[in-house]
View 1 (cartoon, rainbow, N blue to C red):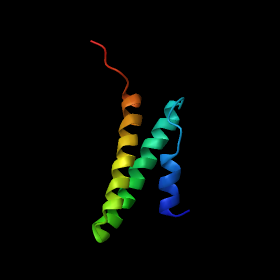
View 2 (cartoon, one colour):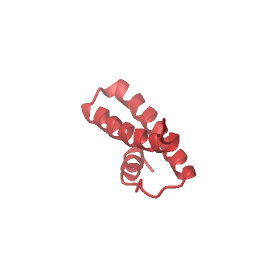
View 3 (cartoon, one colour):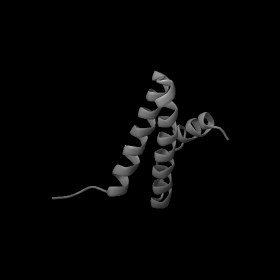
Length: 73
């Protein structure tokens, strides 16, 4: 499976009703995708790659926010 297919598959994942282990897996997968895209971006400097990394980062932040939970004061 090439990188584009993995990115599109990740962005189409349903983020609702995920278990904790699914969230951890999604977070790790997002990190790996971002690192791979970053290596390509360093060479090509294509804005589309940067936009894709931003989308993945946005999803990753949402997943990690749910992992950490809400802090009540």
